[in-house]
Length: 157
Figure 1: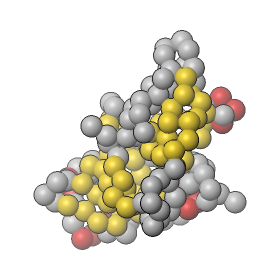
Figure 2 (figure 1 turned 30 degrees about the vertical axis):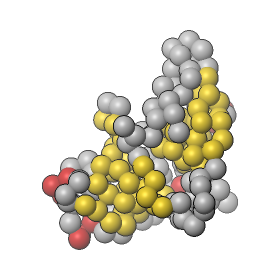
Figure 3 (figure 1 turned 180 degrees about the vertical axis):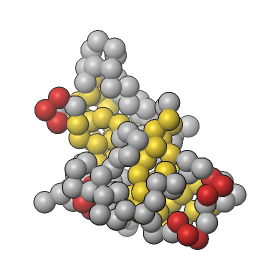
Figure 4 (figure 1 turned 60 degrees about the vertical axis):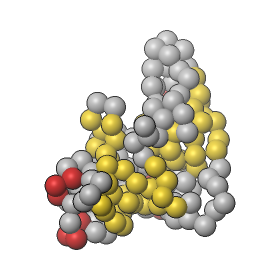
């Protein structure tokens, strides 16, 4: 099952899909958020713990399927392209922390093993953290969020 799902396309009929190159051993998983990175910033890579950062990271979107690279051979990855109006959903890192006090906080991803979650524990830092939490479900342990313009591929000036 995908770690990150789309709640709203932000008014689009569908999210566009593009194929990007990956380096050998990138191992991008379906449903993971990806950004520009790798050697020379010429590839897509998964967001890691404490990503995305405003003004530093260039998030492209969500992996539609697992990347085709192997341990020794580069590959490709199909990616749903998102923008700041695309509302996404992911599990909270610590669901017991979900409550009204986290709404609209700016936080980041936590990558533990092969699972990307929203790190609602991180604390609000709107100048650095690239995710804004919009809503949550204590029943499901999930957070709805958007990526800030300054952390998106098309948002950096």
